Length: 490
Ligand SMILES: Cc1cc2nc3c(=O)[nH]c(=O)nc-3n(C[C@H](O)[C@H](O)[C@H](O)COP(=O)(O)OP(=O)(O)OC[C@H]3O[C@@H](n4cnc5c(N)ncnc54)[C@H](O)[C@@H]3O)c2cc1C
Image (cartoon, rainbow, N blue to C red; front, side, top):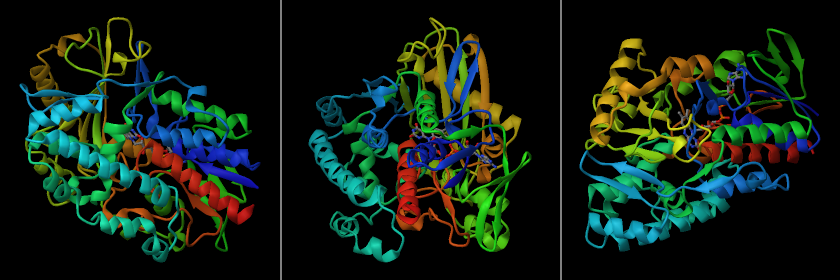
């Protein structure tokens, strides 16, 4: 069968590899110059930046993906477990490391509150149970109807575990200290959500980062993307870059290919990895849109962000590979991200600094560091050069104060990427970095479907679909779609 895949992000790359292996004739058409999508690369003066993902989490999911090809991740890249997993700055004077050794983390939680270690142990036990259930019953399954979901073991066990409670409430019942609460909740940011808006079943995130660990693929996340790209090519998938798809061609309710500036590309099946709202609103006629503009207007979007890629001619002494700067009033911060009435550029945001050169000597020239600074922003707010610069300087001031280190006088490379760039480079709806947030009403079967309800032979993969946001989730999304296509077409 002739398959066209629109977009070469992790969703498109992984689907290309899976479908090409099944013997389909696969063509991937990508708007930008490189594979990887949100995991693009920026190189400047010997500094190499992963522009998007930097946390390699859920190693089991990567293993599962490569096992489809009788391969292991280690056949493509070297994996290292980070220790410490990450550093947290609660304030200038309160800085803690979350370690790869759980015993040390129990001791850390004991220092936060009475019995903190025991409480963390219990919390992680519950998170592990939920994770195993999710892997078996939720993440790899496609819930096509509400009955599949309500009959699922997932929901039954979930009700026993009280999963319909929100995460904030759940965590408040388990821990008393601000520090403990923040450490078990910050990771919800990976799902483009806030503790108040996320079901407590997502406390699996603590099993993911604390128990399964934080890993680094040597060469960065770009190495993971290029590995899947090579894998897809090895099965015969063909790639075409710098060719934005302008239209999905539909004749009598059936797709017959796509149109680019170069002409028409015929296909028996079109699988879209490009952003879902952009595809529905801009590439399909209104009568063929399963989810028209009004649908997207009402969704809770995951945040956009300001990302500063900064190369400095010195090494930071007081930072490690992953560093979180968590603001005291972070609840207020979540409101400016998720409440459309309060959406605004933040005054005192929490932020994240990644320094891959701490682990990977190829990321920066000798004796220098590659800094990736990320500040979450509400999607859809106005973007301007002045606002970007103001926020960037506010963060640099804060970073210099908290680390006690000079950065400004050492900057060789600086690039800022924010809302308008997400829109322009990835056709991201309202400039969202991550797509659809993981609220209860946007989880599992409540996420946009893998298969169009209005156009035959039109499918979707990637972070907007089930199971959702993050590189591992997009790999699973493609596994689900490839399975559905196999079931349907053989
Ligand atoms: C700043 C940032 C940090 C992140 N951090 C992490 C992390 O640490 N760990 C993690 O696991 N995840 C992280 N994520 C999330 C993760 O990167 C995404 O969930 C995942 O990469 C999404 O993959 P995708 O294939 O669904 O979408 P994309 O990567 O966006 O791929 C879609 C592709 O479609 C292309 N496209 C768009 N329009 C067209 C068109 N008209 N024609 C042809 N092609 C088109 C785009 O150019 C793009 O290449 C991060 C994301 C961002 C932005």
